[in-house]
Image 1 (tube, rainbow, N blue to C red):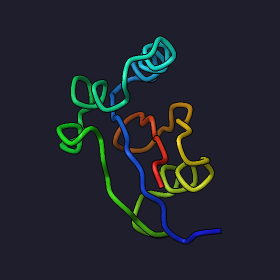
Image 2 (image 1 turned 45 degrees about the vertical axis):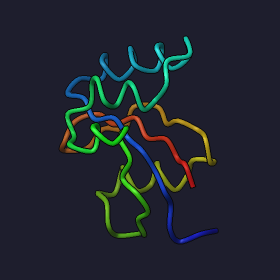
Image 3 (image 1 turned 135 degrees about the vertical axis):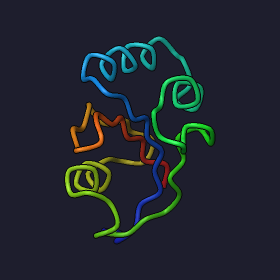
Image 4 (image 1 turned 30 degrees about the horizontal axis):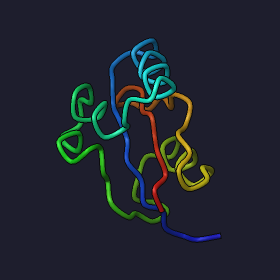
Length: 91
């Protein structure tokens, strides 16, 4: 098990927004485009790319979800104090 992951995310305020974005992903819209269009995080401009991070660098619910994903997999909505995240593991 690696102690670092490389991930992208989309941050929205409401769970229903995150679920709507999951539907768009299932319809074939690219994660990067959705991040650029909808994410509240400045990383949205880079397609939601957070780069590589290790354990202890992100809030616990986010970290737990990111490390549990397979490469290429997108999480269900993950609630943190910042809002709801969709996380895609890219490495």
